[in-house]
Length: 260
Image (cartoon, rainbow, N blue to C red; front, top):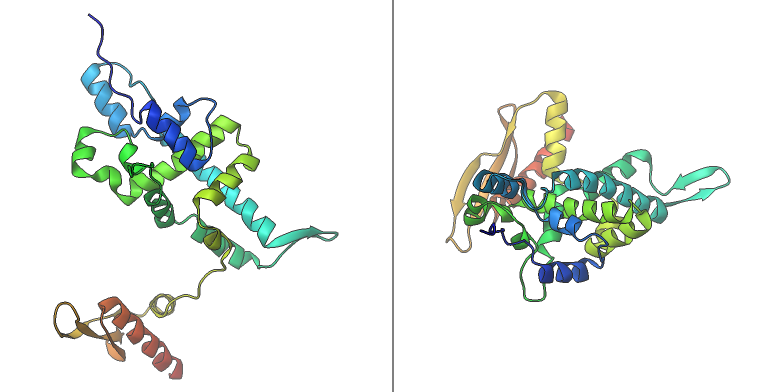
């Protein structure tokens, strides 16, 4: 009796559409299919069928993709924010700013958002095309931020493996899939809450944002919070959202603390 084989995911037709979307055609398509194969799928398959899954999971490709993303982003940054002169490489930014930009570019949340923006012409999202376990599929875990971050890095790792880690291929791919403005932007100024947090941590102070009151209807509320540092209220803010009210309170707290 012929062994029943599990359906491949993504399908061959979906694979061709994925290649069109990312702008790269694989010489070895199994690498692209591997990028979409999660460990939960391979483990479930092997437990059910008592034999190896038809495709390896994407974890190794994810690791490779992470490294290639860093290399691609640094290539982009060095080209756009500096040049080689007779005295060596000169950058528009100092080392600290350069490091901060690179950290922001590799932000995991940003990678998840990139996957959110990728889909086939029929609207099927890249996240939905992953081969995953029945449990992850029914719970929707495959669509959580972390698996989507892994998927982006795995796709990049698959391309890197297929093209021999050729940055002349990888860099344009990253630029196509990502937001060019995000890739070239200098770090945004830290918000008041972040600055207050860093100040308090440096000084060893305790801080909190207790809610004083919430008024108004549910569709248009007003939150009033106070910023308490070492048991003393040093700033107050009100806004529609609690987060914005906390930011306003933190700004006033920083101004008050600067006077003391």
